Image (cartoon, rainbow, N blue to C red; front, top):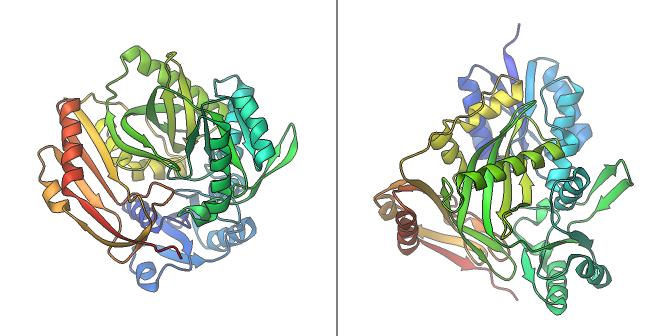
Length: 443
């Protein structure tokens, strides 16, 4: 019998995919990474696995690539790390459909589309009887006025899809909402993540084919008060485990973006009964959508009425230092667990060990896009008492975003005995580390 082979398809995250692929090799699998043709030869060749480069990410071509690879290999699993929209489809959905077609472990393709489209996510929850806020779509001023009548103020205007908290605005007046819509329609194509804002369709069993254009539509939804949180899930074929709750101690809402500056775990503003309410609610969210065999990052608020209320559902592992949090507090190795999900190996229910003290994570984001000149102060910050790890994610000369979105340039994972310790370390990092960007000049 040929060596069992895993195929990993990913257009936007080659380095993370390579890390997972190397772990799979260590676990005894052969691996083929399907990546963009833009990946240079030296990166594609210098790997302990095969790299196949393509420029056609349509479902038809992905199917043809799979057939060619499977004809000479014992394929036991296929998956994607991010699964974002590519302009030729939602990659996560395409890969899940391909895996299902060939009898391999897979996520629910329909659930992946409904999770990635924030309007469909809320519609699904509403139909399932799971609490979600009032919401509507708008593509022009007339539709916006109707959405405002339905949703009320204060409200949030944001993209239907996307990452990095881009183009998120809080509005309290109709004039402000109209200005935000105008700004969005004029500038969304300039965003750092605009390539994820792809037009797509959904086959709605009630309404037939529904077409969405994230570059020309926004989601209008009721603003949620209260504390912002995230819940990190490990999902198997038949279970959804809410493993970690991160308490977002510092979230800044600016004109066209929301910035997550400081998170802490275990949560410090929720007692055990509140935490259980959050877990129960988010499990209902995951089950209503139908997600399985994946990591999942659920963002929500715990409102003034003691009611958890979902913001968004991301069917992938959370950003910043969530992988470190999983490993430190629950002994969950992201890459190994991802591979087990991919090939259908058992994944045990994670057991969280309550730490002595608290763990914090923070990030630095440029507020303007351009070319990175330098990141200074990392070595000094690494010596702060309580620091576990700090790293930069861009090199001098590389382009970074920041005009309308969160773009992680630096993040850190650290430990303290109290909230005051966590806040102090966060402040020290921000004082020591400087990100210098040569800002784009607008003619």
